[in-house]
Amino acid sequence: MKKKHWYIHLVIIFFSTLTLTPFAFVINNSMRNNTEFYHKFFGLPEALGVLINAGAATFTNPAAIFETVDENDEPIVVEAREAVHYAWMRLTKSYRQSWTLIRPYMLNSILVCLVTATGVLLLGSISAYILSRYRFFGSKAIFFFIISTMMFPGVLTLVPAYLLVKSLHLLNSYWVLVLPYVAGGQVFAIFVFKSFFDGLPEDLFESARIDGAGHMQLYWNIVLPLSKPVMSVVLVMNVIGTWNNFLWPFITNTDAKYHVIASGLYVLATSVHAQNMSTLFAAYMIASIPLLIMFTYATKPFIQGVTSGAFKA
Amino acid sequence: MKPTDSTDIYRDRHYRLWFTLGCYGLLAATVILLTVFIYLPVAWAFTKSLYQFEIGGDSQFVGLGNYREFFNDPTLWPSFGHMLFLTSFAVCVRLSMPLIVAKLIHSVRHEKWRYFYRILFLVPIVVPGVAVQLIWQGLIYADKGLLNEALMALGRGNWTHGWLSNPSTALISCAFVGFPWIGGFEVLIYYAGLSGIPDSVNEAALLEGCVGIRKFFKIDIPMVLSQLKLILMLTIIGGVQGFEGMLILTKGGPGFETTVPGLWMYYNAFSFQRMGYACAIGVLLFVLIFGLTVLNFKYFKSSEEIQAIQ
Image (cartoon, rainbow over all chains, first blue to last red; front, side):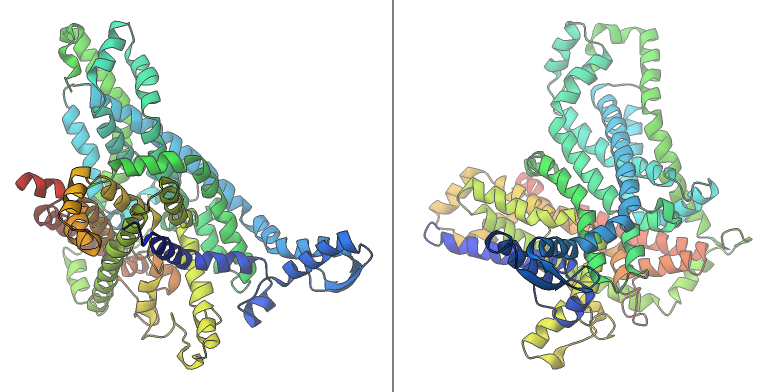
């Protein structure tokens, strides 16, 4: 096993390359214009070459004259420093363009994600704490009531839920997203939290109670600090779910004002921009940034949480 | 764990009553949300499937008419066939590919590298699912896309296709979306299973000379059965009810070549305004999923259960 170690690395890198290749092409083509995409599929952005050449020239020969094009493909003749500027503008053109297009969708999605995650963590942890640490008449029945909803797949409730929110006059609003998301999302949260709370030693609560802690203090000062890792797993899973949810916002919020990022991207890709590949690709990349930021902070607890065996059948 | 009510104050009846009411009060929001947004739609799914109606129009009781119509629907058997193909394909690749990669990562010696590789496969999770489908549609399967251009570059210009628009390749192209099907989340779950194998088992296997491929099949796979079972169940449920991919990639076309029952339900509800009929399709898919879940729990034992039996 020790001898053939290098070839394991090689196979893993081969697989990860295959997995990541499409995204490399997306990033590359988000910086090229349509002519480049449709006529020279394999190639780096032209503007990148200009940027490097002109960038080097600013140090070696600032007076050098570059014959190049601006971001609207108009020919221009400029000095090195300005050529760098124009090349940079060409590289980022589609990002600026798609940002103005998808900014409202991004903001809607971030708002919905924040509200949903807050609701799910709050309701989920309180309900799970009560069901896990207290015994009272009907507690088992309520837990069964909650957990039974897991057997109803989305395909069963999609159409009737649409009829419901329509008769509640919730279509084209934030409520039509947040309320069902919290309703559905809390179930998984309660399930995960409860199995975590069940495992906390009773001595911990006993000693806090002897020290005079009330129910609220037990929850706030003991349960919440201890459940940070499991909270971050639920949080990350919930945000991924909300961010990715496409179908429900697509059918309920048809007003462009309430599009979230997933439905917005689909609408964008089927709109007048359908052939404008660089704009679309830039939009996909911008739409990935929020989760990327979240993962840079949450990767460690997330990996630990999943690896600790929270997910088994 | 001892029940909390062993403490003296919990025996006081008045306190007990108010305590119980307080618990109900705190659980009220959860229960109300679930009743309104899950149980009510579930009940409606069954009742409305017995009616024929459009939104805002009159509804007419048709009994089991919607179900009867569905079984005579000419799209029924092809769409179930497509669903069966896509689901079995997904089961095969999602049970194998991430497990192989997880095993490879797990057998790397340095923790630093193992961590790095796990993150590497986790990176694509940040791209929204819709964007992934649109990328496959617009970048890979497009007429001037990666696949065709690569074939041209390799001098196989006559192999180029309209991958999603050609009836003979549309379905298999849909199945190949996500190639090489190594989801970072699945890798993590399998990795967790492999990490959970006790050292004693690994050492015993090593002593017996059970290494490499043989250990993978004889030790590792039986020991991660509960993870395999989880992914199997999630993949089957996702496959039976999933239609977003087809909606984005092909809209069920060309013709009905990539129509699946879920997509047919979607079109009936939101294009043809046939709400009752759509509810009936939803109910049938639920029954199918429910049946498969029960079968899974009954016949597919998890590793804990197998250990318990032995």
